Image (cartoon, rainbow, N blue to C red; front, side, top):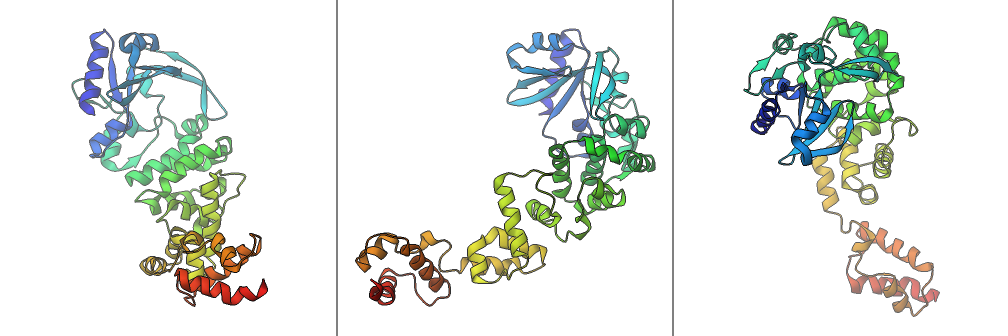
Length: 367
């Protein structure tokens, strides 16, 4: 991945421009962590990048960035720039292209994200980000209050980086978050959930949660039950415990269904055959984890169920009305429901002969 990126830098520089890998990749490289994407900054204008890479460029261009795809890898290539007049505490209203790497770095969020790598693999640390990496602390580039006032989304990014990297936030950052956290109301719930999901799925989640609570972000983010969350093993399970308003944080229909089922079975016996059968292994396992029950026992009991859905019953509605000599009708559903319960309580074996004999004996006289 890095070799391809360095070749890309060399190609840009062979055309008379300057280009560097910047941001998260360099940070993770120095920390010995893997990265999934590479960002590049350059003094080449977007039209120059399109001219160099031509058919490898995606058609969309936004905020002076061009996406280049080479060997199935995406590279976001952004021209050096200065930004002005942020709108809604989120996006710059205006920007201008510049020819100065240092000035471009000064518009970025945190010092740990300002280190660059040149086409020879050398690290450039103009603003002192390496010192923060070594000290395991996060500082903003410049004044923290100004950075968060410009873009309130940086507040959540700060907590996310501190969580994933197991770093501390500087005292200046914490103070600035207290002063600007009300601006999070201008950030969409979709974007907020993206960052929260990364925090909640981190192996260092408790550090992140402690920061959210310490800084009062649970209230600003409307996570009013965050301090009550007992288990972080499953992301959907976390959201089920948070019990957020459906009209704020949006979930897919499937996610919402799972959340609602988990919330229901939290008040039920997750070792009970009927609860296991009707709500399934995943939902009961998540609930068991939240309640600190034995999840292995839940799995064992679920696998031991004689059936896992009504489709597992060896007879169907056609068999029922044929053995009774009746026309199809609504009565079939009630009979199958009765059979389903009898199988789960092990009063009946799930065998064709026994089930048909039971139907004929119990319901044959009602015809």
